[in-house]
Image 1 (spheres, rainbow, N blue to C red):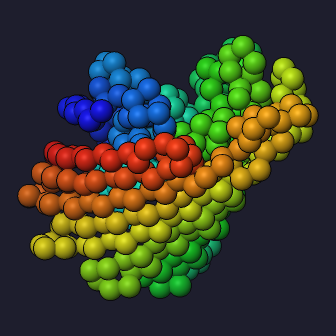
Image 2: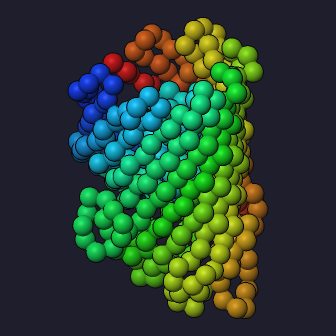
Image 3: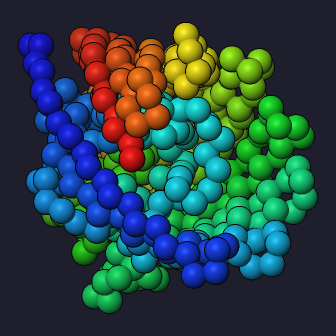
Length: 368
């Protein structure tokens, strides 16, 4: 049935510099934007770019980091709270990646490879270090390591004993209009004693893609993942930009669990997206956008009993979901923008038996 809701997210960013080249960043935030996911729509594919799983509207410290240069070519970011690769490393989707003014959907912002640290399902998590090394005017090498519960010294948590992600990226920019990225990420997602949360595909793929081996608090499956991504952004014209990505993930079960999971079981997961952005559409500061793609989908999986009665017993996605999004950001002035848009999910959960999901959104952003 159709439903409507109103929500908000408030952020206060405090920025300090000691030398003029470094930055100490502290963020206080409150959010009551309940994740528009499976309890509401039956799938995580419908999530918005700013929703949260902790929508209690309490004020908390959402991010704390220190950024500083090393020489003229290296920038280092040390995250104490709220570290995410997509904040530290170029996601190669410059016009649509921003939560306040870019894509309306979680899927449309950037490739799920940048969520490989598995910190995004809970706020104020993620500790570690990242670095960006400018090899030349055209080539940049980036990398980082983030632990989900790096500030918790308990067994099975901490910087090196719990869930973590490591990412490296080589970005090639032959000119100011074109950027190409090759990205690799490795994750270890602990099924037990670390929130019991294994989220392989950035919490916006299918249920099988997010949790291919059905890890749970009662049957935890520690899972490692290898993510491979190719991303591009091309400014065809001052008022037209093309972008997109393709990503492949191999998930590996690191322990046996019940009758359906054996150590060494593997799952293959694919995703892709293309987008068009229209800067200054109508007037300076406006933005039009169209996003089309396939949310993460399991194409093969070793999970399941020896004798199968259906493909679902293999946690294998049988059909193909498609994400279509259109938005138009109207820049009222320097402090206010209004963005109406529509998100359509065809065959939600990669299941053609599910009804198409239509989500109309009106986002109002105040920035001071």
